[in-house]
Amino acid sequence: MNRGDGGLQSTAQHLFHGLAPSYDSVLEYVTLYQDRYWKKFLLEEADLKRGFKILDLACGTGVLQDYIAEGDCEVVGLDVTERMIRIGKEKRRRGEANSLVVGDAESIPFGDKSFDVVLSCYLPKYCRTDRMADEIQRVLKPGGRLLLYDFTRPRGFLAPFHAFYVYGVLKLLGVIAGRTSRELEFTFKKLPEIIRESTWDQTLPEVMLSRGFRRVGKRVLSGGVVTAFWGTKSPTSP
Ligand SMILES: C[S@@+](CC[C@H](N)C(=O)[O-])C[C@H]1O[C@@H](n2cnc3c(N)ncnc32)[C@H](O)[C@@H]1O
Image (tube, rainbow, N blue to C red):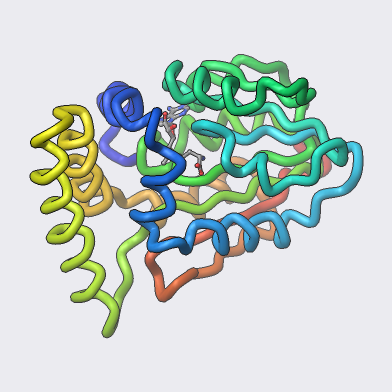
């Protein structure tokens, strides 16, 4: 994020604590079943190799890991919301090697140069992009890659439809959900505000370049509803 305070981290915990039990299905509905295509795009772009050690940053319940063939890579998921991690672990009871850990993307609890690739979906709008980039740069091996995407605001002809959906339909869902769950009401009311206020996509490329990332690229997906960014830690970086 972008406002220079840590407030959104606790907002995120509040948002996702309430949403956690229904998160996987809400993700499908809210993204109109597009999330699976965005995740597949990210993984194609990542071109993962057998034996890679991957950090799924802000992993939630571990949805991204479901798209990575088991056994090919070691995937570690990190998320600040303990309940998302707990539900992710319950989904994976049947002896998978991948691990899920509670922790903050702005203070990643892993050593320097630990990962070949950092992947992340929907994190930057909840973070100070400079702190997030510092930490990702630190835990990546030299030559390692960061690939992420998050919600953005489309321009052009899609903009009014997007605004209607995010600020109209989602807010209305919040009012309806509020009849049964205060937590879901908070989620659906707060998320549109966060999407509207976030400037993560404007700050991130510059922040990545200033942290020594090279080959920084971006792809606008679904007309700008989300944007993906990627970059490579310089092989000579400390
Ligand atoms: C929309 S969910 C995405 C989960 C998962 N990446 C996916 O694609 O399904 C956003 C996640 O970001 C997590 N999050 C927000 N701020 C965080 C932070 N500072 N550090 C780690 N995780 C964070 C939330 O707890 C939540 O699980």
